[in-house]
Length: 304
Image (cartoon, rainbow, N blue to C red; front, side, top):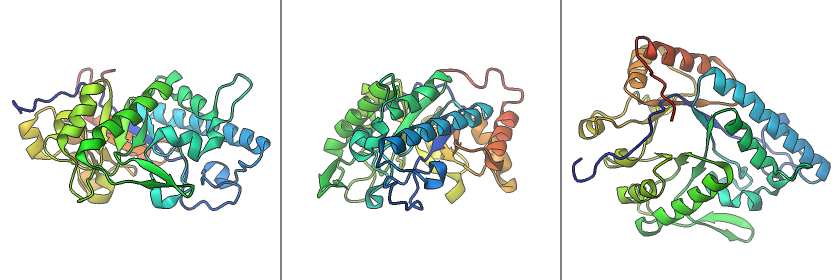
C-alpha cells in the first residue's frame, strides 16, 4: 500500500441504480435497437415514430427518477445508450458511438436538444449522478457491424480515457462501469491501466468488472451478490487498503440468510447496485438495508 497508495476520493456510498434501455428479448422490425419502452413497440423509421421514442425515453427517465429518489440513490448508470442491435457485441461500452449505432437518440425537439442529451439532463437536474458502461476494447465497424478488438495493457488506458472524456463532457457522467476488463489472454488488465484513468479523472468512480488487489487503490470493483453471493469487499483487499470498497450487484435485495452480512457491507462502505427503472421488492429491500445500516451512524450518506 505504501508503493501503490489508495487514491479514491469518493465519499458518497449510497446505492446506485442501473438502467438497461434495451433488451435482447425485443424483436420488433421497426425497433432494431431493441428499446424496451412501450413493451418494445417503437418505430424509429419515421419522424413521428422518433418523436414517440423520445417521449417514451424521457418518460422512462421521469419514472426512474422517482424510484431512485425513493431509494435515496446517489445516481444511475445507463448500460446501453447505444441500444442493443448487434447482440454479439453488447454491451458496446462506447458512448461515442451512440449517434452512429442509435441515430434516433439524436432526434431533436423544438429547442434543438437531442433525446439522449435530455435523458441524461433529467437525472442531473434531479440531483442524481449519471454514468455509462465503458469497455477497454476498441470497436471497429466491419460490414456495418461493430466488432470489438482485443484489449491490451498498452492501449486500454487511452481507450478508456477517450470514451470517459466524451461521456463526461457531453452528459456530465461521473459513474463508470467498465465491462470486460481483461486482456486477450483472459487475465485481468494491469492495475496501471486504472491508475492512469484515475489520475486523469480523479473526480469519477470507476467500477471494473474484474479485479486484482491493486484495483482497489483506484476503483470500486463490481461483485455480484445476486449471482455469486458476494457480500463484501474481500478481506485481503481491506487488509491492504482499509478504505477499499466494492459495488455489489443486488437487484433483488437480500436473502434472509445474508441480511446481516449486507447490512455490514453497507456499514463498511460498500455500495449496492439495483435496477433503477422500476419499483419492486428488491428496491424496498435495498432501502431497508441502508436504513438499518445507518441506524446510529452520524452523517452516513455524505454528498460528494
